[in-house]
Structures are given as structure tokens and as C-alpha cells.
Length: 193
Image (cartoon, rainbow, N blue to C red; front, side):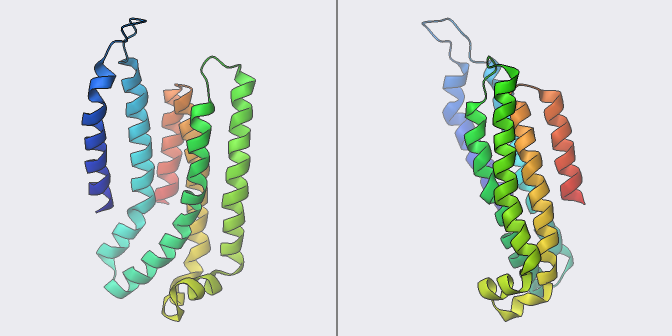
């Protein structure tokens, strides 16, 4: 459902934006087609990160009983909160990066983005490691505590994906697509592990 919903939304956005992407600026004569590569990379990156960070729930639903899958899904949803807590950092960081800015200025933005990601994500992860059973019981009830020991582990994966996501989108913003592919590979390894 999540993947289909995203595909439908992205297809709709593509058709709405298509006239603007194909247009030539009448004042400057600039063609907007070079933005296709950047937009395509952003689309692939965000789609891949979202899909990969949700694949565990899909596989659990395929291979385990509905009860176990429901309990796991609850734990994974809470753990995924780390990713959604930190993803806004990328949303703010990305537009601030400029190709024409000095290298150190962009690097400073990256350091700030990583520091905020480590602060928010690391803080949440610490809580997941310290009181996982309490959190699960508080938010979902006693019936869901049987898999509470997985919360810190799934949270750790989501934290690593969050950090790699900052690096991935930083590289895309600077049009360093080969470095972005490396970050994407790291996300794939983390999500698959």
C-alpha cells in the first residue's frame, strides 16, 4: 500500500511539473532540462530510502503469523520514528547547499545537519536502549511487549539509515552522483542487514 501510494503521488507530481521542466526561460534562454537529473536522483533516493526502511515489515507479514506480524509492525513503527524525527533535517539542509558556495561553507552545513541528526536520533535511540519494554507497554499495551527487545535493534538500523540519508542527499545537492551512489549502497547494506 505504501509503495503504491507513493508511486501514484509521484506520477501525479511528474505530470503536473512536466510543463515547467520542459520549458525554456524566456528571459535567460536557460533550458530547465538539466534539473531532470537532479530531480530524478532525488526521486530515486527518497523512494529507495522509504522503501528499504519499510521492507522488514513487508517480509515479516509474509513469513510470520498475523499476531507476530502485528506486534513486530508496532515495534518497527516506533523505531522508524527515529528516521522521521531526523528526516526534517535533510529537508532544511538540502535547499541551503549551494554549488557556488565555498567548499567549507557547504561542509559546515553538513556538519550541522549531522550534529542535529546525531542529537535527535541518538537521543531517541538512547531512550530505546534504556527503556524499550516501558515504551512499548506505554504506547501499545502489555500484549505488545513480547518483541520489545527488538526496539533498540530496529532503532539502531533506522538511526544509521538516517545518517546515511543526510550524506546521500548532501551529495545529490552538490551533484556528486557517484558519491551519492556510494551512500545509497550503504543504506542498502544497512537496511538489508
